[in-house]
Length: 146
Image 1 (cartoon, rainbow, N blue to C red):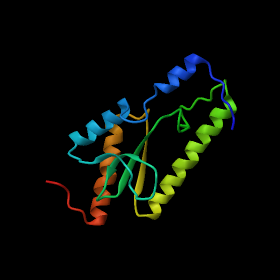
Image 2: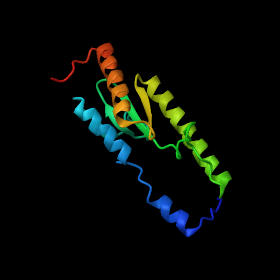
Image 3: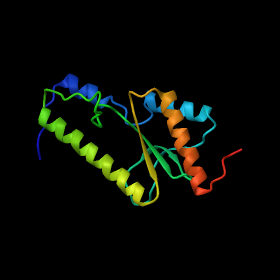
Image 4: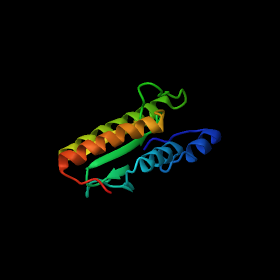
C-alpha cells in the first residue's frame, strides 16, 4: 500500500470537496424541475452495479452524472497537480476508466448515460438532458406526466 504524503492545507481542502449535492448539481436539478421534469436523485440505476447516478429518469432509463473537471479529467479544464503527480494522475485515470465502464454497463442494460461537466451552464445542460429524456420516453412508449 502506497503512503501518500500531503500537506495539511491540501488535505483539508480535499476533505471539504462535496461528492453530492454540489452547486452545479443543484442548479441542474432546479432547471430540470422548472422544465417540468421529475426524477430521482442519487440512485443506482441498476441493481448489482455499485455506482450511483446523480439524477435518474427511471421510466426513460436515463442516468445523468455531473462530473467535476478535476476529478474526472475534463479534456478542457483538467489540471494535473505537481505534488504527488503520479498518485493524482493514476486516481483520475481510474475515475475515467470507471466512468467508461459505467456507461458501457448501463448501455448493455438498455440505459443511456448522460455526462454533464461541472463547467457547463446548468440551463444549457438541462435543455440537452430534457431533449434526451423526451426522446427516450417516446422510443420507450412512456407517457409524459401531466
